[in-house]
Length: 241
Image 1 (tube, one colour):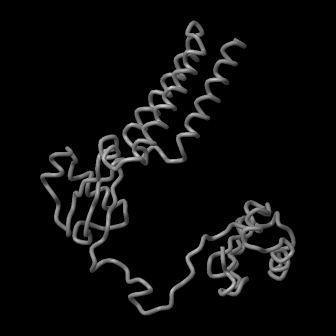
Image 2 (cartoon, rainbow, N blue to C red):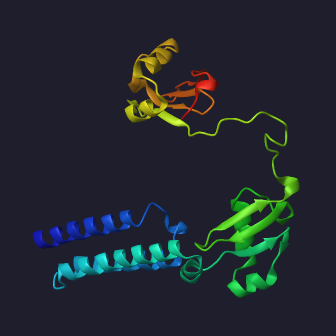
Image 3 (cartoon, one colour):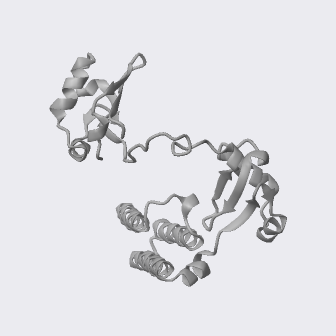
């Protein structure tokens, strides 16, 4: 029993490290060869766990070999566009200028109902609002609304350009995020003074406090009756994160 427990722990750690080294992409975002490697790794890990007669080292070596193959194929796909097309394939246009490409659907054996479902999942009601649809190499659909149904940009409206940064979470579940505070160039005392001015005495009373790229601080208190507060915390010209 102890042997089986230790084998399971070791294989779990090896598999977790291998998948972590493969990157943070979700299963739906994996390239075809990455899906194959992921499935093979899971199968190789379960066999030594269920049968103690199978050498543990053999399973570990096989998993590490697949990880090496993943690194090699990734490096090849980055080094050459031609190899990338060979390894990963190329995107396919399913809808062009609002018109379905029937021959491409037939070639890919892609069902019309799946196409319409993919369009709706992107927040577009139907084909009449669709400009283009591209089937990416990882199997996901990229749906673009038609020009007439695309929201106007600030540039098209003649509005001044806004700073494009990254919103920062300063407090999460009652805990001050010191690293994020340093990125923003702010100190914890500054944030606590703002919170106290809003009647919040402790960090632990805050569910989340986030600072956007326009200098606005959004604070939500914990509890069903927790308030949602917005404060102009930083002048917009000083926002540089």
